[in-house]
Amino acid sequence: MIQNIAGNVRAFTSNVFLVTGETTALIDAGSNFDVIARIQEHTEQIDRLYLTHTHVDHIENVPSVRDAFSIETWGYDTTHDVVDHAIQDEELVPIGDETYMTLHTPGHKPDHLCFYAADIGICFGGDLIFANGSFGRTDLEGGDRKTLIQSIDRLSDVVTDDLTTIYVGHGPAITSDPQEEINLAAQAARLS
Ligand SMILES: [Zn+2]
Image (cartoon, rainbow, N blue to C red):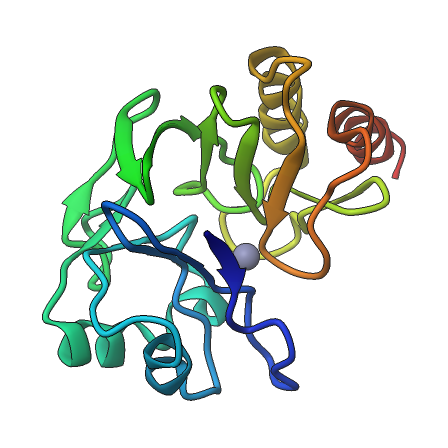
C-alpha cells in the first residue's frame, strides 16, 4: 500500500510516501511537520528510508526518522550527511512488496533518483516531472536544464505501456496517461 503521508500538510515540504509491505519504506522524509506521528498512524516500524534527492524540503525530517525508527537511509550521494548507503544507477531495491529499479536522473539536482517497478507500473519520480506537463526547476545549485531534459527523455525510454502511476515529489500523482505526461514535460522543458 502506498500513501502520501504529507498529503494534507500545509507547510513547505515534499510529498512523503509510506509504502507498507515486506520492506516497509519511506520515500523522502519531508520537512516542517511531524512525520513520526504520521508514520505511526499506519505502522509501528519502517525498514528503509529512500531519498529521491537531498533538497531540504525532502530531507529535513531525516534525523528524526532515523532516531525514531533506528533505520538507515539510501540515496545517490553518500558525501551528504543524510545518506548512509549509496544507490547506483539501475540498481534493484526492495520497496513494499516489490523490487524497484533506480534511475539516476540528474538535472533538478545532481543526486536525483527515480524508482521504477515495471511489473506493477509504478514510478516514484521525485522532482523530475510533475502533473500537467510540469518539470523540476533547474535554477537551484546543481540544476541544469539540458541534463534535466536528458533525464526526462531517459525515463520516457525506460517506462513501458504498463506504467499507471508516477508518484511525484510535489502535488498530485500522475495517473492519467503518464507516458504522455512525461513527453509533455520534456516538451515544456525544451520550450521554456
Ligand atoms: Zn527538489
